[in-house]
Length: 335
Image 1 (cartoon, rainbow, N blue to C red):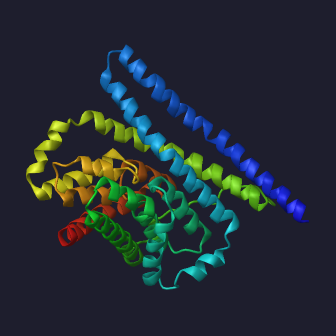
Image 2 (cartoon, rainbow, N blue to C red):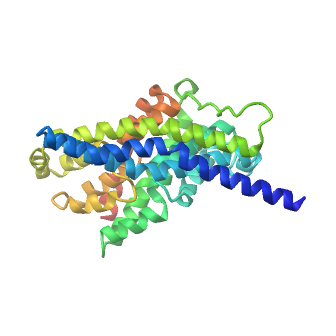
Image 3 (cartoon, rainbow, N blue to C red):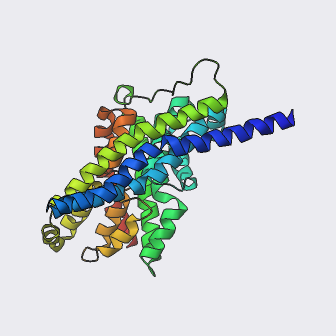
């Protein structure tokens, strides 16, 4: 009996590896070909801006794919192997208490925003986690995990207050948005993701494979759309125009908050981008790091594809405002 179980485990691992290689190969191949042939084709056509577009587009997609795959794996594992009673026991029954607990739980997922969307969708789909708590986790996971905080400390050496400010402002935004959804959110605004169909009588291993296929390929298409939008902004807005807005502290905060939305930098790398924007003040740099993991074009596309466009418009807009306010308040107090 033990030998039979070991055989099943080996088969599951083998099938998972095969799917990851074959199922994701199409998306990876397209991006790779685009990255290799796109710039060359653009140069042949004497259009360097198009070559730059391909470069930015490829960088954003390749940067997000590993974490999107991580999120799909975690989401599928939750849906197939974790009983619903686990979540009901871990989280308080009161939404007011469940939201900060779920927000703090974001520390344990070392991924970016691409990973948090399918995981949050799986948590809500199973019914064991209230949407308010799942949304708090969605926002906090890519912003307060140890990888991001260590990267921030390396990008701002000798400035531990920047790490503290980022953690406080990001967690504060996630918890505030969870509470706001619990108070004002409506079920009609949120389209719960459907459970992937694995057929009647399918084993847990089959459900796991179906979950990976559904989440990775479904969300991957929206990742590509968001990356294309980010690349378009990068090549159409000149840097000289951005420098005009550095004269005012308040304008610079709003500018970098908008810039974080359109650049779509992964949360593990955005601290180094923020540090390079040395012409802006520390509060503006903080706003860039707080807004980016919670509201950007590729994340908006992922949310729209997973939870519906109506939800994405409302939730992203409110999150952007709360993130900017939180950054200013924490930055004024800590920095």
